[in-house]
Length: 168
Length: 168
Image (cartoon, rainbow over all chains, first blue to last red; front, side, top):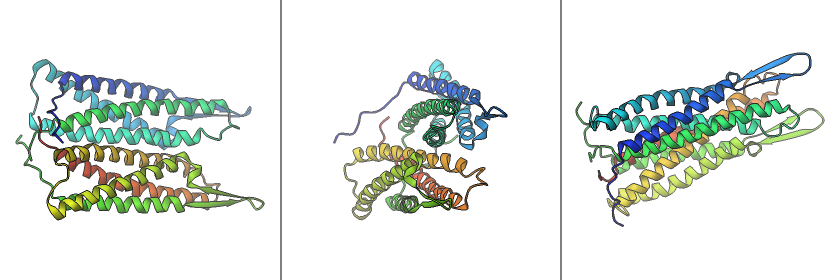
């Protein structure tokens, strides 16, 4: 088999992927934070929020971390697109490689933890109020966006792996 | 900053990481499959198994997939260690790169989905039987082993990224 052709991904494509990641994560965070449900049994009311569940707290943490990372990386990429230079040269490619890898794993686990709780919590709840179902449906929506964010960050990670400086 | 020194990871180290991954995943599968609890209220009994939960079924699928992949890769690595040749050359390095990346993401989501369900299910259950707690504790143990398996596969993924053929 012939070796694959050299891969040089234009910085603009990298930037677009990062910005899309950022948008997905931002919407996901907004959905998680605004997701509340009030359950009433006629006498007392119980308000359920995302931070009553460890899984959703973790999901939020990963999304916020992802947003912070994507913002910083986008700033560097914009610099690269506009000037054609790479701050830090080879070392910067190494940082991209490990950073993208780490963040994509973090986002993957965040989305999976959210789904892990929501999917099973949303089953067999026929007896419960449709408010509860709404709550877990919204949590699922947030997890789905986080999943898309993860897939985009995985693309970033593949790109930064392929553009590692050639050393061996 | 100076560029990092060339990285050439010996195939034997690669093999050791893969075998450790395999062992972790195998123990994790055994724990998941054998994890059952019988809840009795004095009149009737309900048996709860891992396949009553989507999150644990997914966890099991990812672990089994991981085992299959690790076995095949170990076989190829043993061939490489014993003969010093690499089947497929550069193309094989590409397959390792994408395969390791994919499997490490799969394992990460499997472990996270397991934790996402177990951690919250194990909280605030003071009123429930200690059998239920045992069940979720065991599920947590399986998820922990899967997490270790994921971390090991992430190491494999870094190694296979660094040993990509030089193209750019």
